[in-house]
Length: 230
Image (cartoon, rainbow, N blue to C red; front, side, top):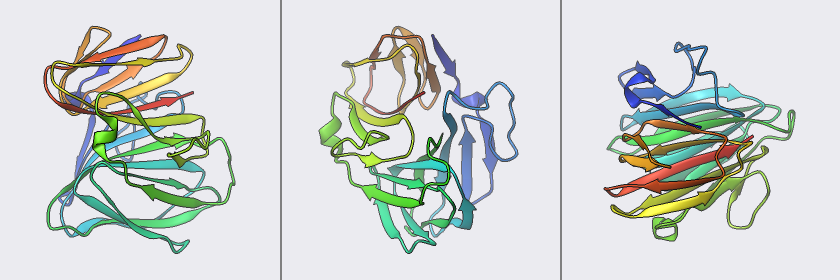
C-alpha cells in the first residue's frame, strides 16, 4: 500500500519566523486520520528565518531526529551539549527522562529542515544528543543509513526500532530498496518521484506499508529522506 499525502493537504502554521508544514497532527493542527504512521509521530517540514529559532523548551520520552535540508541549525540543551548541524547532516536527541533544548538558526539565510519524532522504546532512559556529518556523495544512487536503533556502525543511535535513511537520486535513474511488509515507511522527496509506479510530487508525504520492495524513479535530481519504523 502506497498512500500519497499531498503537500498542499498538510497542516500549515506561519509564525513569521517559522513557516511549518505538518505531515501529522501537531500543535494546533489536528486531523484524526493523521495522528502518525506506525511509531512515527511527527514529521514537520520547517523553514526557519535567519537569526531566529526555537527558544528553550522541554521534551521527554521521544526520539527526535533533525535532518537539515538547507542552511544550518545550532543546538543547545540542559545537558551542556552544543553543536551546529549543516545541510545534509543529521542530529538526534533522545529526550528520555527529560531535557530542555533550544534550536537556533544563527545564519543570515533561511534554514529548512525536517524534524521527525519517533515514539521511544525505552521510556525513562537517560537523555542524550548526537550529531554527525553525512557527505551527500556517499548516498548518490543508494540509501545511506543516518540513524538507527540497532547501534549500527557509522550511524547515529536512537532508542527506537527504526531507521532513518537518506539518498540522492539523479534524474532519469532509479533506486531500489528491500522492505518488510509489516513495517511502516514514510518517504519525502525534494522532487517528483514514482514509487512502485505511484506518482508523488515534490515534498508530498509517501506512506508505505505491505510492500516487499520499493522502486523509486525520478525525472529530476531529488533528495530523499525515508524513515522505516514499526
